[in-house]
Length: 222
Image 1 (spheres, rainbow, N blue to C red):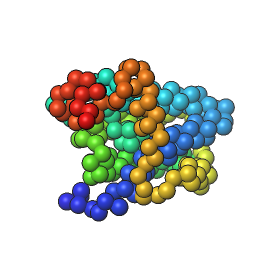
Image 2: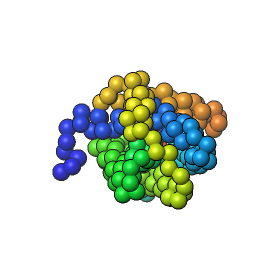
Image 3: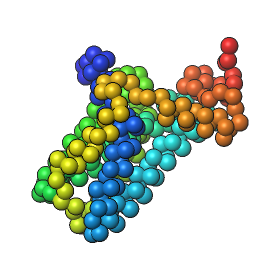
Image 4: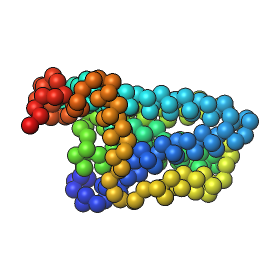
């Protein structure tokens, strides 16, 4: 029933997981945490866990695009970037926006971020952009990123920022995107170029290659 919403609705939801939106938002989180000396160590922790998460996302995509490393049995070609970034950034962004509130309010805000990330994951399925295994693994990866960071923060000083300023800075990245439209292809294009150059191939692997059992990215070219 849930997947029967019209495509424009899911396009609007999936837009909230766009890398062009969430990568700058992740950078803003580091900025806000790094403003004060007492929370600067938290900024470095965020940079570390977020950087590791982004590296794993990119690495899984490059491994498949360049060398065809995937799992045909579960239709897996790499982590869903939209889902993984959403589950990484949104819980922490919501926590930061509620940093001046009570512990319960911060937990509620982070939980909403996780719910939003789950909705973005469902949107990737509704738009046939990813398989269930890719969305589920992406959500799990993002949950590890945001969960480990928030676990570290449990007993550390909170930034106590004004929610309006945090939300305004995070929303500022949306000025470069068109709400409700498909994500820009620059990031995917860059990954494809990097993959081909690293693997020394003239074409990237595709999902069709994986499911058909083809072992070379040049196979099946017309």
